[in-house]
Image: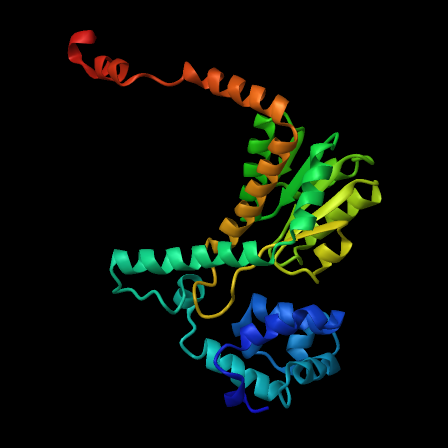
Length: 304
């Protein structure tokens, strides 16, 4: 198949065949989707090294994709990501231009975020989601770890689960996460968050938790990734690749969507205690909120 016959979205074709790829081909696919411009500017040997596979695997992947070879694949990548790729477009996307109005930017960002949520909801396994919620509901201890931007998702989930009395700890520091994972026990749960599923720190920490007998869960965008392969249970997000907003917060929004689903399902399963604890925590914050009349009097010179 020639490059022009593939269409302008080679990333869509790669994602479509990922469920049936071998481990080596899957590693190449993930490398290309994670950094398509780097793949475009790499030789077959360089791409193989980046993915941790043999050079022959790159040729086999091209064949599985339905193209003549890596040179044709690079032409397809060029058609999608092209020479217009810059630091600006890699983070903000080709659709957002410096001269766009605020309304236009708002529409583009909203469209990307809504699409990420819709796609995640469509492909998320309800069975896996229910299984994870069940084991987290009965867990003696829940550890959540994500590096970089994923750390914010871990912290948000900890905050929500603490409000309903679940013993949850979130970690952003690798050493602290690894140390805590090393003392987990059967009956505990470890949730590792990594969009690529290839973040070494998260994979290693999940492995340490698994070795201790804890139930391990991966929240990732790649079900064939090292993180997913080592986890007992897998939850997947989906954020479309392509020219639109590579570095957008859509990834985080999709992860937070799954985290919110877990929180809601766990609260359902513990409704008696959750409702009481939510009421208690809400009451504890009442004294920290001033009424409008109080604030007005505080601002009035006459009250000083």
